Each structure stands twice: as C-alpha cells, then as structure tokens.
Length: 189
Image (cartoon, rainbow, N blue to C red; front, side, top):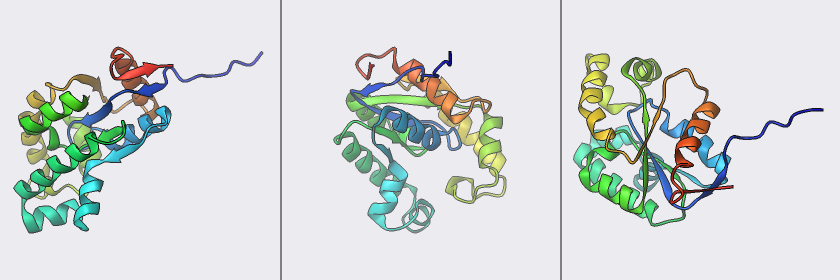
C-alpha cells in the first residue's frame, strides 16, 4: 500500500496575512508559496508601489526620498487591506510606522518572519536591489537596521522563526501551524 503525502494544513483565509520582517527574511518567497498552498492571492506591497509609480523602489528612494516612499507604502498597504483576503508581503520598513502596525492588526494579521543577522546577511550580501544597504559598510548597516527594528517586529501578532535551514515548503508548514491557532484568520479544512 502506498502512502499519499498530504500537506499538514490547508484552509481558507478569513483575514489578510501581512508578512513583516527584515529584508532577506523570506517574506516574498514564503508568502508566495503560502498563498499558493491556500489558493489565495499573493501581493507584494513593493511591487504594487513600483507598478503605481512606474519606477523601482531604489529609483523612488533616489528621486523622491524615503519619507515619500513610506507615505506611498502606507497608502498602498491600506488599499490592499481593503481588497480580497490575501497574503501580503511588505517591505522591511513598512511595519516600523505605528499607524501601519495598527492598520494591519485592525484589518488583517501581521506575521513576523524572524531571522537572525547571519541568515539575513547571507541572503542579502550579493543583492544590489537593497537601497538601505548602499553604504560603505553594508554588513554594519544591516546590523544597525536589525538592532533598531527587531523590537518593533516583535510587536507583530504572530511570529515564525526563519532559521535559514528550512526549505520554503517547510517554512509554509511552520506558518500554517501558527495560523491554525487563529480561527479568526484561517479556517482549517
């Protein structure tokens, strides 16, 4: 007799799951796979901002500055939270604004992918698409950002460890296990 492998969890989203955390934590990769597993839409706030502005996030930072970008980011997140329940990946700085944290918790649920500094550095050190790391000492800059942001990320509604060893599918299993504890967010099938 052959055993059929089943996914540990599936279900239907009742609220938008907003992936938060540092650059390189896996918000987009895990978020996309989570949405596929649930048959839910996947959206990325940075991609939505780029589409609306017709330029990349680094170009927006360079031309208009970070405060302008953060304002647009809040507007886009609000619009996306008003839409169909989905999995929403946000940029690393999106959760820093108290207004964004409150909006996300009121209209969705925040899920922090909690990765430590060595894992993050390993994932971002060769990427040219990180405007905040365009400094003389990108590793030091990442560490400063990490130290400043972790206490804020810890305010997320839910948290899952992203240790750098789990595959994307294993991370989705971890996320679904945590979401399954919240019947207001996920109706388990």
